[in-house]
Length: 180
Image 1 (cartoon, helix red, strand yellow):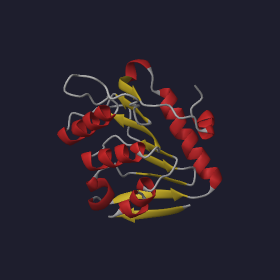
Image 2: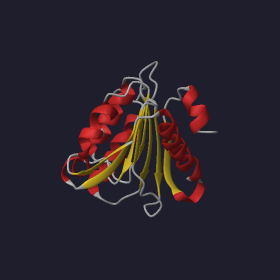
Image 3: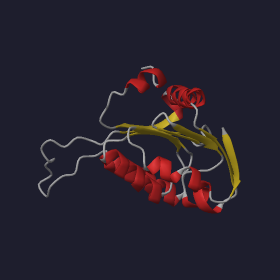
Image 4: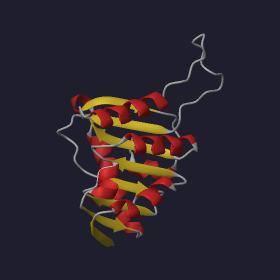
């Protein structure tokens, strides 16, 4: 375990997150359009992306949510037809009532996890003074992933404003994290 306090916490999150090969788990009440686009691109490469976020009335966050939701809708041609063979990217999103989610968790490929105060925005990653705890040992990462899974399962029913599911990809790690 390591920790960091100060500006520029993105140096401890961004490269790992955007370099994911199997999956990323993101819990952040705020997501900027820049990072929404990066998460979509990851999913388009086959990386499973699970996002737990809040319903916020702030324009940039709303734009990010719209981008993520749009990525899960099939593109249509001028006649309204869906391209044959189109499958949604492997993105699952839970948008919960704003008063319920404040945690910031980033877990990547079972090999790296970060918890702290930084939202997934340019300000959170690079400009604000934030605090992070960084985990690279298997036991701690498993605990962080289990915590994410617990939050994911906890938000059901009336707390969820919207929920979107992309193409399901079975990864054995998810059997442990997301007991369905």
